Length: 78
Image (cartoon, rainbow, N blue to C red; front, side, top):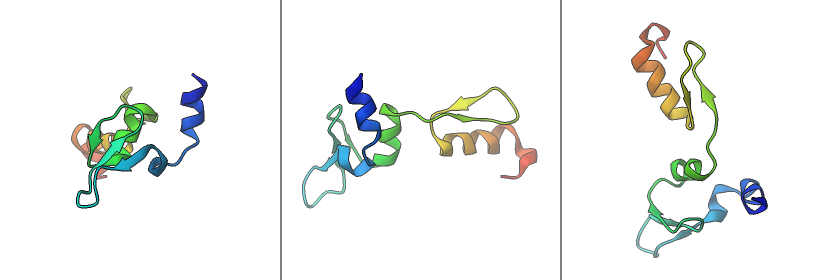
């Protein structure tokens, strides 16, 4: 568990390595998965808490909360 707490202080770039010099994809050093979007994959291991102010929905990513607000609460005009 202390390893996870230590890793939370690392920058996103410190837990990913390039697959090769010709490819933009990166390998996660925590699980070995090869991903294109390191920011989104980072939240798989270290989820955030983004709560909707109008209902009880809670998301791990801010972009997912934004999509929720746009589709479920169109009166906000977000």
